[in-house]
Length: 408
Image (cartoon, rainbow, N blue to C red):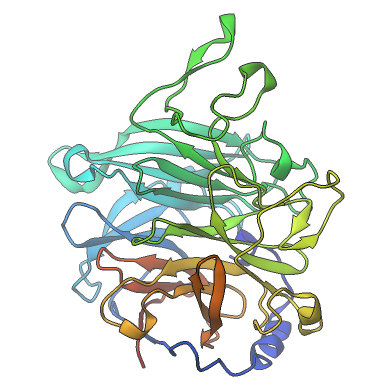
């Protein structure tokens, strides 16, 4: 699973780094983990979301190609299979699989949802629309698949793959650089490539693109306020792009009160970062890793700084913009907590590290981090965070355990 985000050292090194973490700061509340679904048995969970249809059902992705549904208020014993594409073998390597799921905002009435998964021969990422079976919202009509996007991939690593609808009703897709490292094709700064980007699509319309005899209808629309929508087609700029220069976003989310788009961007050699994604924003990869030089780039070029970054090794802290931040190896983006069960945590952006298991929090106000620190030190691999319709947060672990974030 770690290659899903970035390869690292062995388990002995992880244990040493985990034990070396300093005590959490007192400015932010401590958290604990409660297991709300003890009867639930899953393998390699990737993400979890509550359906926007008032049914109170959670939907959980397994990397090998299944989606399970179960009631939020139960213990997980009612889990049943919703989608199964295991026979397509999306999970062909450690970093591939069924990686994203998003329900249409009108799912209650139209039954539509969207997934991102990997396929081989040729290696590619696929984003598709599916519909639930007629008369049974607990099963998927596999024959309903409509492929919206296929993206060629050169490597089994750094794919991203999250799909989510924003508050604006458009579908966002995070795609990684798609290489084993170093972005040799410089996708991050290439506006003619979909890779290393945040994309924004309108699934309710169809766009017509291309000149003359090559003109064709796309299976999705381009929102009229996308940042590159007015670029001449002869320049080859991908009008789907919302933001660029992102190495491998692993989990993004919107603050349900402010509408801000938060993302954890996985680093390569030295730095992990948390970003606020804005329209047309350039976050620097592969000219920069975090706030630090990585490859030569245009002189005088300006990039959006990370909200926060943290290093891989203790000896790098002196060069860090946030030297108080404890170390980690592979960021997992989270959510701004807006639930009611844990008032002291309200307004805190919660994020974690896949490799070391540390869960951190930060408060952000008027463009600045005003508080930051570790909320919990624990050894499990943090694959993903999840948010229910009430704003409560959950943590998905690589070993298949699902926890809710609660007060001690």
